[in-house]
Image (tube, rainbow, N blue to C red; front, top):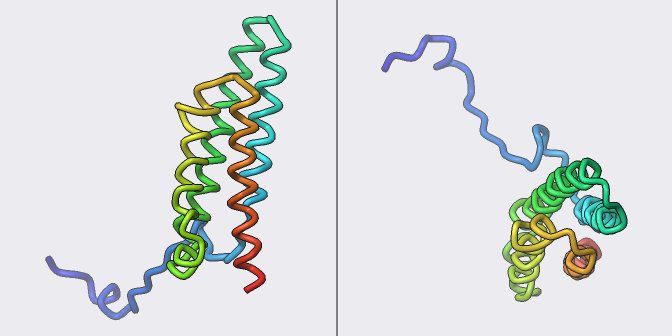
Length: 136
């Protein structure tokens, strides 16, 4: 296939990042804030009998759970590098367990605040490793 002359003359540049601009800003607090929202929604859901409120709460909780997963995946795939995984061999398992706790078999599929607390505990473990890597 023939490329126009102007396309052949332009340099080809390729880049990837967790957003549209490779900013280099990573923080597990983003996942934690969304997980705190999930827990608060679970608590409000349990305390309210109004079916419309409960439906809205579940929808929002599922959206927030997805955001938790996205923030964790960004850390896992973009921030953490092979040396981190070598130094912290539990890191793969922690991120996997946390994303499962944010997913359908966890907080996304449950309205139990205890499940959200488990998710927060996993995020805290990931955050501890994250901040150790930032010191290094």
